Image (cartoon, rainbow, N blue to C red; front, top):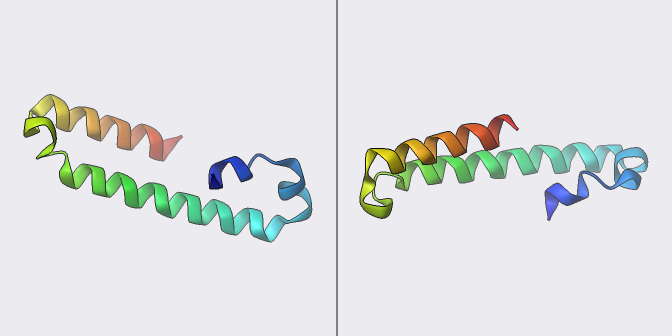
Length: 65
């Protein structure tokens, strides 16, 4: 929901401060979620190496995007 607000033109143009705060909050929550996913990747679905690699790849891709 927060990421959707980033693309609303009125928020970007008229409410610049809230746009920036929303962006920082979205980024912090995304990184927190990725760290949590990487912490449980060892136990998820048996903790196979392929599962851990997929979780790591998804974490990297979502963080850099």
